[in-house]
Image 1 (tube, one colour):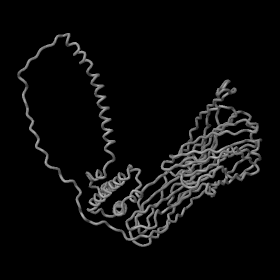
Image 2 (tube, helix red, strand yellow):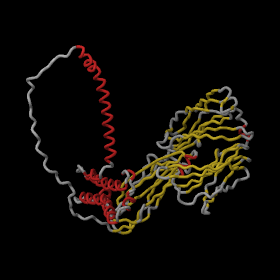
Image 3 (spheres, one colour):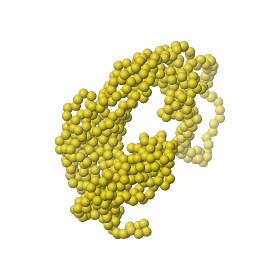
Image 4 (cartoon, one colour):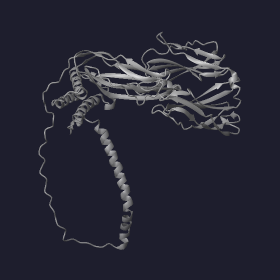
Length: 555
């Protein structure tokens, strides 16, 4: 549960989250409350010493503080620290109770707050039917869906027997399929009944996309259960174990087909939030400007088809798309990001038209058009590089020395030979018989030694040189431009001491001397115009690349 929250909050510098586990209790039961402060990095204010969150607790609940823990987690390029406050949460009265919001005071005197959480308390009468020590269930959060909507299938068991274990065989979901992103999740938690008896609950969640329409029949889930018996002492369990095999009730699901789609439908079915960001508001003619479209939904965004965007006065090219999905605290979250390169073709103020996305909202039962305002771009005159031609090709080496003639000699026509005694020949014969195995072992040893020499040579050789990209250039214009760009990136990466895949080009250019940085920036823009802006590739471009790469290496 904490790992899922960290995934969801990894992009926030400081955030607060509160989770009731479980979110539904029977009257008199005690569950758990988690209040987490998540901070990115080590800069900024930290948690004030001795401080606990301030919570607004309704009369129907009782909250008792249990303790604080701190942990760190790496999200790749960032480190997040998590302060986790633990509470015992007891249900006192039936109904819907809103707990929070939590407020935490930081070391600099400021405060941060998180969202409220709703806890449902059910009357004890609902538990009277569950007279057994073990209860199984399977259900869908919604029994009526739209085609393409994500359905959440939940299965689990609650046990009053200590040491309960279960393995599940889930049904085949005809008319449903698992999304490409977002693996099924499982969590376990324990609540205390009013008599102090612990009740362990294990719950799994499977995200599914409704592909078939009509009434779908879902067969039961089957659990193979091992129940621990007897008492415990000295870390051991005494008494018999028993095994049971139980099945949940079958389910049915109604899936309605989507109405005829309007023009521009992206294929997204769910409650979607969309934003668009223009990475800069000023650029030169032919200069690349990033245009980023982000979508977040409670549905799957795989197969998303964004409409074409063709503003007057600029060319737009696809750059990078990324789609993902995951379960966060039992809910499905789909995220998509599409980055495009916008290249202005004329000077002046470029008023960019809004971007319109069409999605289907299951809660409203209709298609929704998202109108995203892009804004404007101030475009100044561009600058071309000079056409001076300078050759950096290596001069041919001196002529190779004349090969020495090979002298062929005839066979020897004289000499002395003798035949050894048989006794002396036996060791030689034995050695000949063992030779194949020995040669095999020797060959394997030499092969391993050659591999080690090769690995050491590669390690000592270091990263490739930028001019290696410029050897044997293809006649294809796109491949030549890609080689030019690769040479420039490799030169910057070698100077920074990183591999090309980890290069931050903006930071690398900023670390260069001003005159070299200016030339690298101008060459980058020139390459972008040729690759993305439809500009012609001049004959002097290769010469300019070689010259600038040499300056970067010498800087």
